[in-house]
Image 1 (cartoon, rainbow, N blue to C red):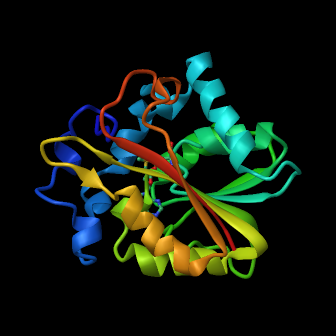
Image 2: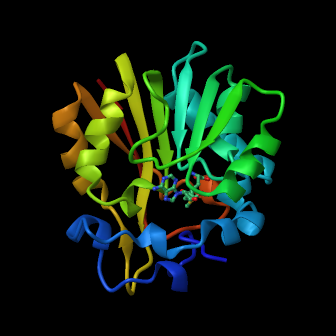
Image 3: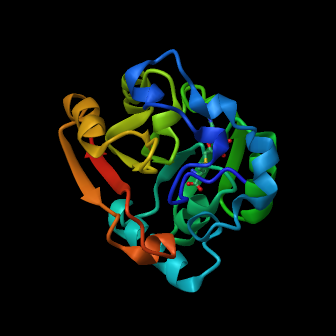
Length: 223
Ligand SMILES: C[S@@+](CC[C@H](N)C(=O)[O-])C[C@H]1O[C@@H](n2cnc3c(N)ncnc32)[C@H](O)[C@@H]1O
């Protein structure tokens, strides 16, 4: 399967430079057949969160990053809904959006009976109409989108006053790294918000189920 968390990137995401950042016309995510990836997606420790240690590590991060009271969370590029599930377990209401119908089907099954809806759509322009959210949560997607600066401005417009962005990203691989460096993402986000903080995540092996060498981080930003 395609897995950006391998020590080196796999074939589906291989690229000689960092296209999402360097050339907004490139869209590496579109080169991946996410419907085909869906069935095995949760096999990776940080995707399926099946290991209780990994699961609790992400749950603890979300407890820190999300509001303490029940709020409306928009999970963009939600995949199989693993972070959405943690958010509902912490009392939040979730709207998930993903371009892959197979991912959305798995997310709907995973969160059946919970306060969550999942929509097939483009995270760059989520099909949420006039609805607004307290949190836009995005893990491992922004770096693949064309023109991330424009997308971030759109996401800020989906937030209620005082809302927050929770962006979990990284740079994967060493030979042909792909992703968006924390410094670059911070530069894009900071002018749009009142407060932005980078949280390095690479040293916390519990999050990944193993030691990782590449750059992993979250940017937390408040309007
Ligand atoms: C690396 S996976 C991350 C899934 C999830 N955020 C997680 O962390 O477990 C990327 C996901 O983004 C979805 N995706 C790719 N491009 C998208 C787009 N333009 N809009 C919405 N979802 C997209 C894929 O279908 C896939 O489910």
